[in-house]
Length: 638
Image (cartoon, rainbow, N blue to C red; front, side, top):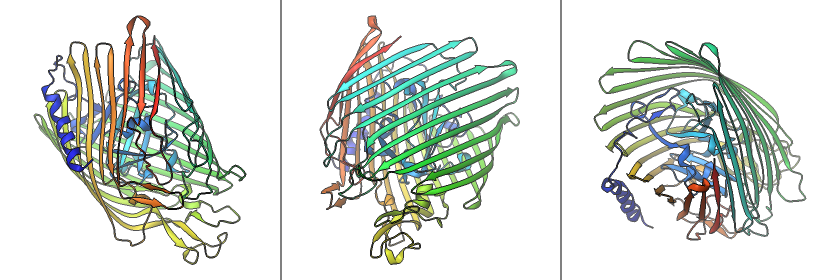
């Protein structure tokens, strides 16, 4: 598929909804409220390119996990190592996979061990009220890792909105021994709300190089919220994620790699909120523990890593004059690791921030953010940001300028540091500095109808000290204690300078197309160009897509629903002679799902085809993805 074909398809998707007669005149896209800037506000006043999808729309789409959902949303690149949520890296606007911050109900969950685990989101999809994807830098609000963007997940159990009682289940089976199941329950009684959910994806998997791509992935959560006297509200969540899977060539390019991995994590989160006449005071505290065991081959001693993340914050959001508001907050983070591979380490991090929002003129909205951070590893950093939005009837002109930053994770600093002998592979670097960038964007949004919106955004990022892996000979290694003379290694380095520029075109249509029909369509094209003045080739900055097209759509007509996900990607080609595999310079992918509702049984039968056209592809060199995968099942909702 050439660029011209993609453009024709995108124009077609833009124009098609114009010819669909909407039967409901209620505004849909004009009054979308987002919280990705830390406070609830109209999307058109945020000054940002924020994409929103509701939780009740997820079930209709041909996806098995949240990373698969995000993969087909405009402007998001998901680089999968395995299917059904096994493991994925997320990148937005050409950043590395550690440069996207994932947040659940206002609390960060990015893992301190490695960004490869950031998509292990401990929430059942049935408990999601909506997902907001903020494209671009937001470190002045959310802190480290919010460089390329923010994935903001808001759940029903922590929501202030009244929730209904629910009980739903799903069972799905398919070829290659696929057996997936899930159950979700929600109960509301007076001022209390309780939810619980279990999700399990399992398969023997397709054949790889002497092994099978098996996976056993399980997630469970329990949440409780209660409204107390005098406008106090308390919320609590406990969750666990337990997974075993084939990890062959997930992290190496060696033919001797027959790896398997086991990752168990728990997540505890509590929130206390007090509402006043002129504002809201909130405190959050969360604890994440994770154990990662990685066997390079069956007879090998596993890398055994135990990491912990403690996060606490206190902030107040209030009004200042009639058209102004502010948020002031404090944040404290503690990261630790105990590992037979990386050693034992601990870091403390503190921050304070202030956000001012105001409307100096009719249709004009502005917000200024200033954040100051103090970290044990890199010291002090000051992070400002300015957002501007000017609304003119159906048009909104917006712009953003600000700074962002990210510190190295424990893998980048200490990988292979605690082993007696390392003959090759990736070596951590404790001397890494924090990376930082200046970010600029400008965009125009057009609300064609109350149900159709078009967005265009130009962005530019000037990145310094970006952390990436680069090949080094033994003689060039800063530390040679446990290395083998004559070996070649990949050393974590601060790349001197990276400049990224790009253009995003997004479309969203959501609404009724008849008395008993509804259409959801989201599509986008992203062009990217990154330049590096350092002659040393690095790993992740060369792997992101140069051209990306994403599509997700679901059309319901009476009791029948058909949904489709698709993407097209162009990137730099790579080859591995040892593994006899390559990254093709481009590929297209399509998934499809059909469902028939059975109202008298309160159920739904469905059939699903992943990789419908049986495309052979890889997102990361060596990690071959499955071909066509057929499945079907039943959903019950009481």
